[in-house]
Image (tube, rainbow, N blue to C red):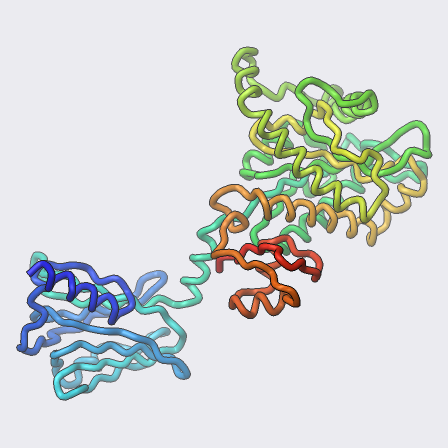
Length: 438
């Protein structure tokens, strides 16, 4: 008896292509007597339409879809239904009409004419309380299913911090260019480019010209559940010949060079004048434990991200320091958020000041940062994010191109690029690509 029951359940799942609920008495489905449909009930839910067929016994069934036009076909074996019963189901935004007929002289076929593509799901319910045997059909809108599946994996959140602002103008160039304005302009361009990438979302710590305490910038990133914080600045030095871009990560022990120490003091000065720089708890022992536990891993990630960004910045501007530097910037002291500070250029250098004012140069800087961020998260995205997920791998063959691979795997070329941080068209034979989830 148990073997017959398992065999029936297996066949039932194969016919429907979906899971069937095991209900008491299913082993008797082979009975030669016809099952009668006693009633049909329809209910609308947020994401699907449900039809319940009340039966006077157990029924074996199968369900499948047809396209152009869209239809769902339900076959109930050895079953009968009173003529005209389907007419009591009124048309709605999903079901245009329902037709029924006899198939193979003994089976009941019901056809649902639909206005859009759906994914059908079916299951049987055993008698319970006043309810008898029931066959339940759920028709899920494919667009709703796709949207739900996509939103199941969250985006990587990048907090973009435009340095200075409001009564803190930052450094000023010889032509009067203010650092606070340049950082906000680049931040907004970076926000745009990041938000165009599947799997990433940008959050600005400030959207206009206003003063923010350094601690409030960190709180903004924390409240946004940021996976990364990028603080944008423009460097300044008494010698106008100084030029180039630099990237900094936090150093627990201090700055990695005298220049870095001087720069850290300059950037932190705004809060010493205008705000509170106490970024941790009051208890010194608790503070030390928290930092010991958190900062080591966070700093390693910050250095890794900084290296990726620095590698991309090299194509846009001369690099002042060839490696990621470390200094005690207060804005980098978020124990659980990898953080980097980018000195985009020297605003004190007339040539670089002119570049910083240029829209095209700002766009190049923003795109370079975005590429660096994308390349890091393509390797080390947080678990549960879209960028950390994949539906398998593909090893590139000689002659392959991105468009052909996307078509072969039936995925979006844009998604394939985003998942693997492919910002150019060249591929290398043997290169392994992650196949993005839908």
